[in-house]
Length: 266
Image 1 (tube, rainbow, N blue to C red):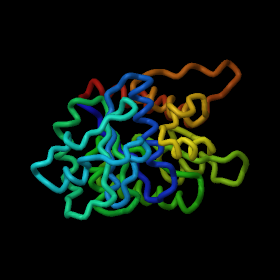
Image 2 (cartoon, helix red, strand yellow):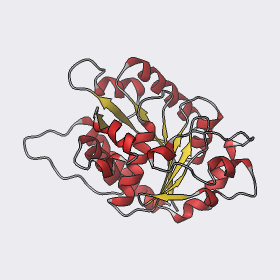
Image 3 (cartoon, rainbow, N blue to C red):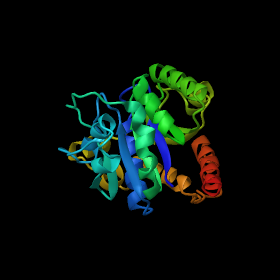
């Protein structure tokens, strides 16, 4: 049965959707995993655009608005990933809290189900949490986003949600941002990936091609690849005798062990 993982953040612009699409693409294309990617940002869905799905037929909104529409009817395939996009123009009532039940039978056919959640603290993000086995928190190293990361961590833990780690995105060189150590200490969540700002990300969005396929050798794609490898139990190669692993490298090894052990628990 597929492990359901939500990417969460209370602040827009941190790269949550880009990372969701990239990780799903990496797991499917590099490791041959069966992956379902779901748009859980119902108010402002754009995951389909990231995956070059421009005019979908059925969407997640259709499935959540009718008991007769199965979630499987909203599945579209792109880049070897099954995608359930949203509909920005949907104007009928729907119930986000049905997400868990609607995914219950569908997830059995996948290794991973990845949900791109809403950045708003309402029933949309709560529905993603309740449907998930674990969460990845996405943050950028600045004080406004740090405060949002602390807030969503508290909300998630109060609801008993498991947070597998934090992805620190859009990191710049120099000392103009908060350090990884300070972010980790303030939020209380281990950083499992540190991704540098990359101009090619905007270009990949323009072409609607996920980064692991658009720029395979970029630091962005390599870091996403390391995270994907950890999730399926693959150990990273040692960098060399004289290079020390970063905090994110150590945390990723712990993530690998926890994900690997959960396979046998389930």
